[in-house]
Image (cartoon, rainbow, N blue to C red; front, side, top):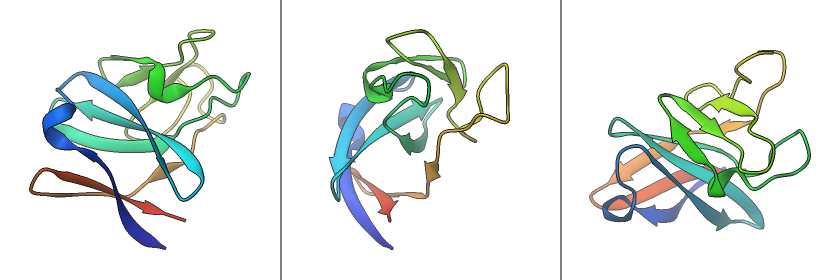
Length: 101
């Protein structure tokens, strides 16, 4: 696995999410109170684009059917056995890097 730049910190305000692509995959990059988290970018429910969703507290809400996942763990808010993969993040200066498989 290798860390790859996917975004700039200056373009990701606290309380926001953005979609990023790297290594042929899509990712949801979340800023929760200044902490950056990375999740797989596809909702397991119907394939919605999580990176186009919204942050509510520590949860990322899918824009298609409002399924919510904890940005820190990837766990679904009502059924923790449903998860979205998470990825290690490094912030170097203004660069956000994730560990892409």
